[in-house]
Length: 422
Image 1 (tube, rainbow, N blue to C red):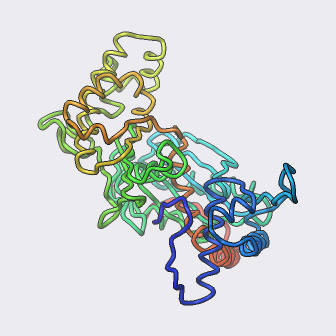
Image 2 (tube, rainbow, N blue to C red; image 1 turned 30 degrees about the horizontal axis):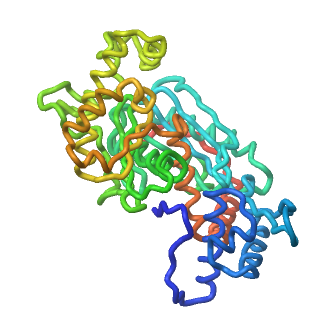
Image 3 (cartoon, rainbow, N blue to C red; image 1 turned 135 degrees about the vertical axis):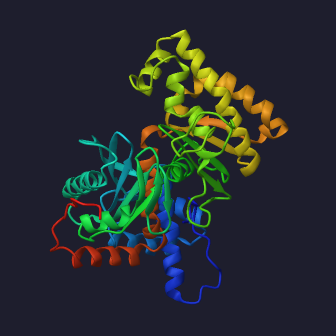
């Protein structure tokens, strides 16, 4: 998956005129999707195309329903250049984020506009795979019913805490959800009548995509993203590309061993980083019982200045810094983005985290800046949506044609809700 937010790099000697046209449409749409409205003059300057080429490309994208033009603001001499902007209701994505307690959902329009956001608590248990599939399928139907007439659904993408095999979306292991060998993508395709492409991704990878393209790491090519929740997930962007590994499992940072013989982790090993800095560990560090308290209680205690809570969070910060130093030694990122619980508590744990990080890392600490994520709880939804937008940004006309044909082919199929995961 290409993550670059600028114009797509293409060979100068494209073999066919169609290839050149497709690449040029991609360049213009990509700029508008990631950077917002621009005048024709801006597009000429950004792409290097001449004015007539830009005019022709924007006209074609307008016919596809992906952009629209309106008169520019008059200022100075001459005729104002038309303003071109993405049409958020021209194409959209259905994005989901599955956690142990809830399912987050969003209908995201072209340009990254959050058109609709929902979060539903699990009525039973996140371990109940059919119930989670049913909830996602129901939310998909509800959001799709609110979509503008003619808007093309580009696909469904789901974020999951755990190891997700690529490209088939098999959840191999998710300790927080209690899932093992769950063919989530296949189950969702069946539940939604095969009307949309379906993809499943690891929450850390999708958070990295989001912060790289639209958040705290914009403009940086080498990024480490770490999300702290019930578990600890991570994603790595190297030279503008998501690091996936042989099976899509790269970035399982929560299971590096930082304390041999330490607490037992949900994965079965002892001393994993996740066991020392996950929500449960933080709750224990502040003197609470994880069976009776939630991480929100810790956040509230810190907010009112509870000294015991602040001391416990700072103690946890030492372990966070230690783990981050090991990861920085391996990946050498320019920026480290903390999301989830770790992002929320970073201002409190920053003194001890920075001390542990610097002490362990040495001079290399100067190359890696640590920041809080900008997208908060929406990061996984944003990242999931960008996965689904990738195809239309690569080939606007071809992707719309394919997605429309797929939807039409299965139009008579009612949404089916699974009652078994078999």
